[in-house]
Amino acid sequence: MFATLFPDIYRKYLLKHSRSDALSPYLQAPLSSPQNTILETEFLALDFETTGLDANTDEILSVGYTVIKNGRIHLGENGYHLLKPEADIAAHSVTIHGITDDHAQEGMALLNMLEILLQKMAGRVILAHNASIEQSFLNSACKKCFGHILPLRIVDTLKIEQRRLERRHQHPATNQLRLFNLRHQYHLPRYNAHNALEDALATAELFLAMAHTHCHDLDNCKLKEFL
Image 1: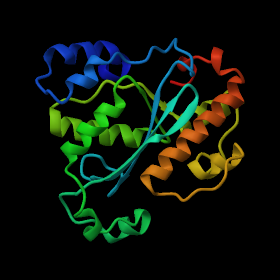
Image 2: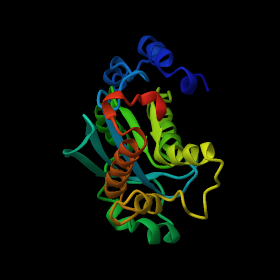
Image 3: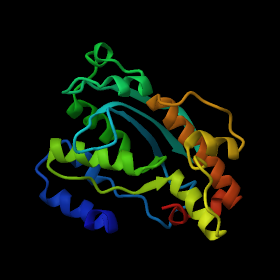
Image 4: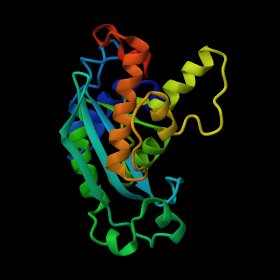
């Protein structure tokens, strides 16, 4: 709870007390200030494909990400990594993400993926759709590999829309808050779901559409309005 409510204080605490060299570059980069504008803030749109929804028992199978700088998506900084899970992948899970056991055997170790991802995350705000999933799996992975959860600033496109409806005293229709349905609502094209990189890109596009719709002027739109 402390790490969530006071992430920058927690970051400074870990910087002094963590013994993990892999965490140091991430912890040395200050978290983005909530007072920064959207154009001043760098985001890492992130998506995981997993074997299930329980971060305590399930595993990350793939990670995709892209970067937003100055209100634009930088496709040259896209990344996709396949991971090798410790347990066999259940058949019902394969039907969702299409990653088979044979395919997953080519993946990297969790620690190696985290070392790459931490470099991309440093100094950036994490952007995800239904971000509790990414946050819980990321926390579980970092706890396992480094002994600590991470201090994070997170923007959740699902929560943005949920709060917008609450302010209007409206309730979301069935599946209205699903990523592909929200993209349609914000006049974005359809995309292929359940690929980590494509989902990350879809989330990045949705966030920028939301920001332009709700703020109009990103020069004066503060990060705190979306946290």
